[in-house]
Length: 238
Image 1 (cartoon, rainbow, N blue to C red):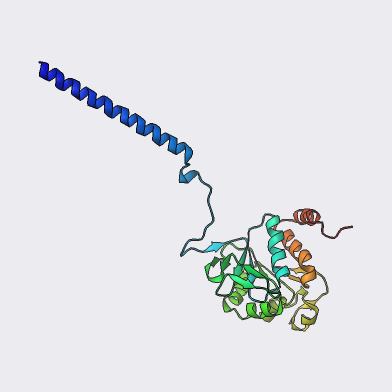
Image 2 (tube, rainbow, N blue to C red; image 1 turned 60 degrees about the vertical axis):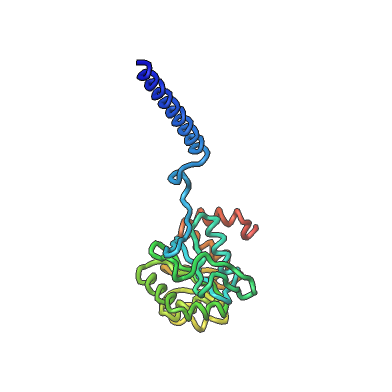
C-alpha cells in the first residue's frame, strides 16, 4: 500500500508541474501576441514582388530627355487630389535623366506595369523625351488600344505630335508647343494652355503644366476638386 501511495503522489506531482509549465507558456505566448499583431491585422502594402505587375489609375510615361516640370506637375497635383498615379519608365531602367539633367526614379518599368485598370495615359514633352516615347512600340500599341476602348489620353508640349502621328487627333481641337503645330496632322490647332476634345487632352508647354494637370484632375474627379486644388496651391492669384 505504501508503495502504491508513493507512486500515486509522484504522478500527481508530475501532473502539477506539467500544468504549471503549460500555464507559463500560454501566458508568455499571450504577451507576445499582444505585442506583435498577426499578419492579417497589418495594413496591406503595395509591394511588387518578383514576377508580379503593378497597376494604377493614371500612368505618366517617362523617357530620357523628358521635360521634368511637365511630367512631375501632373504627378504632384494628381497625388494631392488623391488620384493613384504611377510614373512608368519606357527605358530599361527606373532612373530617368530629364531634359535639364534632373534624375527622376520611376515607380515601375513598362514591362512590369499592369494597365488593365488604368483610366488615363499621360505623355510629358521635351524634344528628346518625345522622340524616345515615339520610338517605343509597346507604348504606341497601348495608346492605340486605349483610344479604341474610349479611355483618356493626354499629352503636352511636343508629345501631342505622338498622338497626331498615330492618327488620334484627326478632326480634334488640340494644342502643343508653338513650333510643333505643323506636326499636328489632321488636328485643329488652338493656342489654349490646355484643351480637351472628346477623350484627348493636350497642353501647350511647360508654362501650361499646372493648367494641364488641373484639367486632368477635373476629368478624373470633378471641377470642384480641381478648383479647390488650384486655390490650395495659390494658382493664378487675383
